[in-house]
Image (cartoon, rainbow over all chains, first blue to last red; front, top):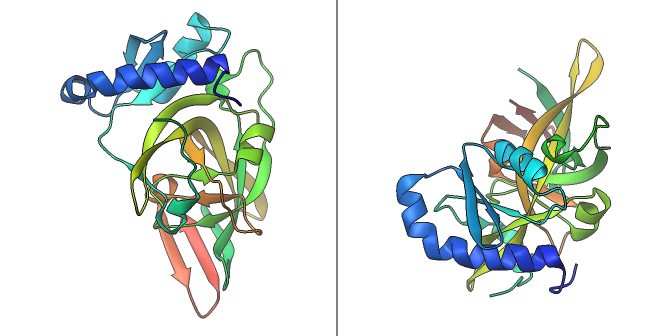
Length: 88
Length: 142
């Protein structure tokens, strides 16, 4: 999957907006999931399954992203060095 | 409470058979997604389950987001996919499958030759993991 892939672009662009709005989102909706499309927050859902089912109806092409509103960072422990840089 | 027993490889760690498929939540129509079975290491030092890109691709998972991953040197964004994960367990001598729906997984890019995934604390914290060193056996109940 290249960086020119429409889904990669969508996820990248949505993630920039998600990070910009994160401090606001974590105050208002911690632990919930944001459905995003075209750099906009479409819906805040209680579960990721709910977000996926809604996205399936709204965006049959599959071009959307879902971000969890959590301050937790992923740590792969011993294997952390195995993670490739995705993009900045 | 379902329980799965699995061996501990002295060189790799607790090795468990893990099923992975595209999430039912994203399935269009009535056909359930096919489950691919892979070897995974139960790793309590890993916060989130991660899977190799080749398995992600063959299971038909789609990119769904990004997440910040902490490494020894920096914090970097990584790809997030959503999958249904499965564990096998025995009940009255019958092998059953339990589904953990809509789990977020990250890419695992430098796996050991004998495993394709790490089962992280996102799954393990759901239940109880018992390590029996002398028996080289682990049990996970959830």
